Length: 148
Image (cartoon, rainbow, N blue to C red; front, side, top):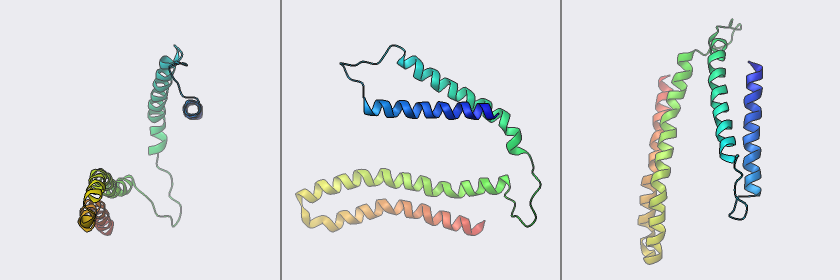
């Protein structure tokens, strides 16, 4: 299984190196992509997904194996781990929603402020309402942590 993890690590390092190379020397009309480029990237992605599936299937037994708990150590069960992930989801989704809301509201606020500077305070209220979505998600997460 270690050879598969090493293979995936080299695969990721190769993708990162390729991304850095194309960031430094981007393709243009004068320098088009080589013919093998699409096939190479697609093959790399296919190998990565295949290796990830094999690693998941072969490593599932090791990940689910019960180890002897250490004396005095707090054991984290699968249910507790899933509960912690579930507790974090409201904050993440609320933050994404707040980002989606703040973008257009902020752009519209800037456009309106250039026309009428006297309504600056009103636009801040709208931005605060949009940002409040993230705070609601954080409050829900804190309340759920109290129940755990």
